Length: 333
Ligand code: ASP
Image 1 (cartoon, rainbow, N blue to C red):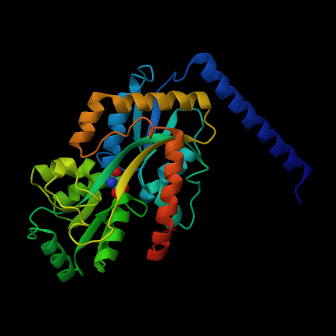
Image 2: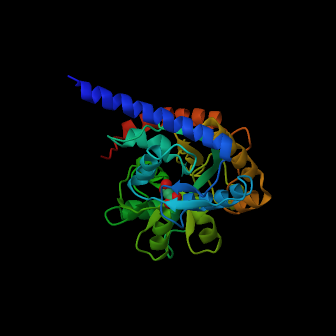
Image 3: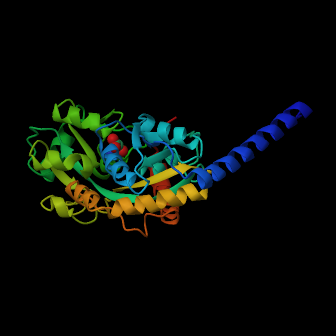
């Protein structure tokens, strides 16, 4: 039974939240958003691929946002779900945003309990980039190509280690699909992001990983690590010499890490409109294009950097990954 007192409290809370929303809409119209620094929350450690994309975008969005600061805040842990929950519960005022990746669509199937809803807790702003992944081994691995790499994993499966950024990360998804495709399980080592995982790979503490080109390209080009395949349907223009995994026998193997920008649900439309326009401006910036191209990707076109495009894509990706994850039977609490 709900008491009279709890009904009164609920009524008051409802009134407060409507007033708050009204206040934020009015303040956007009156004072001009933004009037202070904006935080872009990244769900993985600094120095990794999602962080890199966020820093390039944050810098390029500053001018179209009126010259204010966009600060990247790393809130790593639990494969990106800690940051997603944090932003889902942040004030919907345009000062806390989330820059996430494909993990937005895989976490709902991987986690038994999430204290946010990937679709309902956010206002999508727009897509940013589709980033290919690369399967890379630690320095000094004797395997010269994919065939030798497979033989090495199979022969040493009891001791070989695979680095990832936790359940829900792209590196986790790629590793899960890879192990299932080659029917071999190895020990996984979770990190707070593939930035720190790359340091350990370079140091030889872990044997291999699958990570975005935004993190691996320079290490591959400098010859520090060897790439055994790319995860996209076609080869990556900036790393043409690396064959796709599909070409090398893993039929249907495809993972592309898409990045998107989100605000908490209830963020006023005027704020979202400003963010969309600024994101689209940033993606047209020649510096962003050059930087992304160097990292093995491309900024998306303006028609994909929209709330509708991101919202639709997110739902389609949830529908695509959920059955595959359920079939793999991988869960986290
Ligand atoms: N690349 C990572 C992932 O596997 C995350 C990161 O550090 O950006 O999801």
